[in-house]
Length: 137
Image: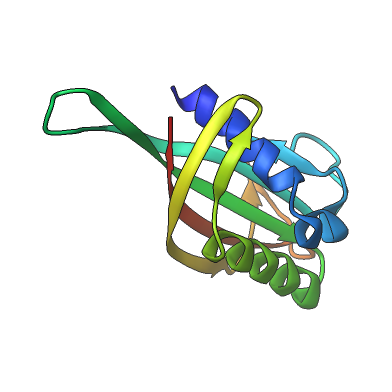
């Protein structure tokens, strides 16, 4: 189910003009890979849970999704995170890549002081993590 929800989230992200105006096509599932171009947005599923209704029908599933905003300047980082948060707060719903997204809860955002990959410290790259709980079918 996580792959289904992630496909839906990917389609939803690509439908948001405020986000694609900043990152273009650099919306990436999981990690950035080698030699990324910034700003960029990566995301992955942290946890998937299931719900149920009183008639024991399997209800909507939910997925806690972590979005990593990446940029080389503070202003680009803040613009990307704000665009993502605003888009999520106004509604993560609709059908994207065959997945029905039915709502979201903003869980929080935090900026990391440094980015470490192995032993290399990338001081020129900034990262902000944004998390949402997203319901889907």
